Length: 548
Image 1 (tube, rainbow, N blue to C red):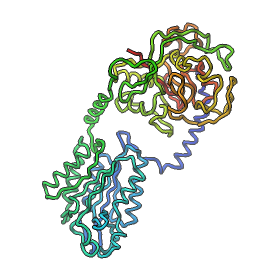
Image 2 (image 1 turned 30 degrees about the horizontal axis):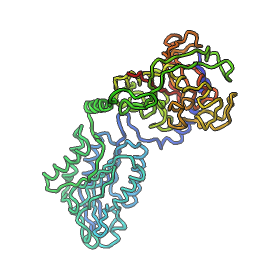
Image 3 (image 1 turned 90 degrees about the horizontal axis):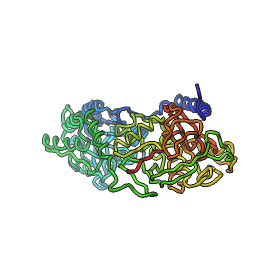
């Protein structure tokens, strides 16, 4: 079997990384984050307090309330934890652990916190408290010291999971509470919570009122909430408003909801509804630029999720390297003139994980979700994608926008990389790791340069200066797939800048060098190949668009 250039080095690195990954997994398995294949992680903590001291006031239905909510949430795909009859320390440790798990689940996770038990607000401070079961009386000021402040819960959630959407449901303003002494001086129920951007609060009844939930059966509020959770394809904010209306009609008490704007979140969603939303999202992604295409040097996006592209000039250049260029290889010749008759557009940056993930979310890219190696997604260059994957992305982009998106030809790539220069790098003849991301601790480039650092991973696509045409990272960070089949030299290469679609078309050209490679591999003329299905941690791609 023929091994492509750079593959041997990759295999040695892979052996080390596999050993390192085995160490991490076997040593830290208990710390793996929660994940779900069919959507964001959904976690719930249900707290049911009912075994209070008689001097506080017994409650009979908290555990039944929690059981109803648990069954509904599990049907909706939540991972549920229940705390029963919690004292202060159990409350604190349980909340801390829950918030930690939510954070590990990622910023797209959904958290649901339900409390059934005694709660009230201090009249003087207007602060809400949940009463643990180890409070033995409500007659003196120690009540406030021994109770758990709602502000503390908010602090825990914001500290550990600030980017998560939280639902905090308090079935707490109980009429069974023994109101004497300190508690008599408190308001009857809870007080409203000032708007917290990512938290929806729901009370079983209106502020400063108590809920009448006597008897051994579950509360009307808990029953109604469980029933509404089980109704599919209703966003959570609407679901809580439905609970509010039904409870008011049934009992006269009006559950309170905090005035907060949240993204549409569905606790229980049918596949048909999910497909409908994906189609709607795809339709909304198409926002064609008005009027004609921008002029040379101007950048633009064709749609909300499209990569930023820049218009490049028509013109000519000499492709390949001269025989006397340090590290020149036979595949870089013979040098030949290439002419671009018309301007065209190309990505200012290599495609990012955010852009790739948008393709997957909108039904494209074969649903392939490449690993980011733990380096982050968003504005990091997408990696672990093959030539076939890159073709799937440009096909999706073309279908989404109606524009002629494609991969760059090899000639277009080098034309952009040189940006009117003829030196090995657009900035000159030498290179350092202050100018590009590569292995700066390896062999020095014979054309000039100095030792630097090896970052051992990719960096965000906006790192380092753009070239004179406004294009970023044409040297280093990740290799870039181009359209051309592999040929061992330029004999017979097109002179009009089009892709070469003859030769070894089971393998395709990559250009630009990468974080794994030495300085010589970053030269504008350097070229190697990989198989169409090769998915490596140092290969990405940049797109092109034929202008109208």
